[in-house]
Length: 387
Image 1 (tube, rainbow, N blue to C red):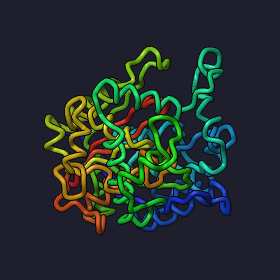
Image 2 (tube, rainbow, N blue to C red; image 1 turned 30 degrees about the vertical axis):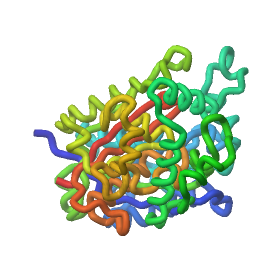
Image 3 (cartoon, rainbow, N blue to C red; image 1 turned 60 degrees about the vertical axis):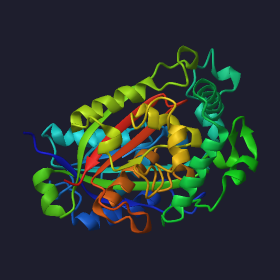
Image 4 (cartoon, rainbow, N blue to C red; image 1 turned 45 degrees about the vertical axis):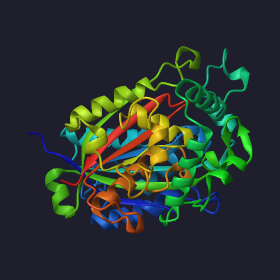
């Protein structure tokens, strides 16, 4: 049996609306320094002396405002005289890449770093660049408008309601009040959400995540090394990703076939056959409140059109049968790109028993999810365990 790969150290910044007092490299160093200290490891120098053998960074040129955006952080991640790979999708894919590097046998230990400063750019202009420049971009589409189309289609096909979306926002922003790194925790009500400004029907102001800056770093190691570096390694047990067709009109936006495929593959790798019963906590990317419900269904945590009833019944609350987004999720403030690793960071804390007030007792299996693109065009799923 192949040796397992474990996460041995994690650090994340507090997420904030604007970190203009630091550049990208300085923001990254805020997580690189503590994660290296936690693991007790050193960068590899020119003579080959050191511990970190490979670096995987995750950033997006459009958000950083420069091509080859990883160049701006190389001297902070130790990648200037070392092996470095850059991922430009959601950062959960960066962990996937690091995991694969170790399984390949080429490396024993990999440092993964991700950052985004959303405050630097215009979100609508940046997201519009993802669409076909001839047929779709001239329409003025961005991910926000596309999300509203998806939310409306989801409501019409499965009967989910704006009130159920609002309950997700209330739950997650409330969970954020127990998370010291959350940017925008709030004690709000369903009525507060529904009375907040309508941005793009049916999405209200409190249904969407805030602009956010932050970074995360993690160290992964093969099993033998992982056990030497920490007495609480968290094992990656399954991972997969999948991409939807590009044109929105070629999809039924109330479905999420790429997520279904990615989840099925990850569960098969992890030996999970009944995800709703075998997973103790789920961290799901929720840039908009409706997405938590839609993605829950795609992840097989309930049947199609059933997630609204689960939020009504309190199943996904801390203390419920399947807590979802105990961290507060993206709705409490995580940057795009960084969001997937934020889901893993919370999963690691939960599986270590280090989540403080939001700790789920006895949690041993976690699910982390990341997505990129309009209406969840690209999906990645990872399962983790402390056993």
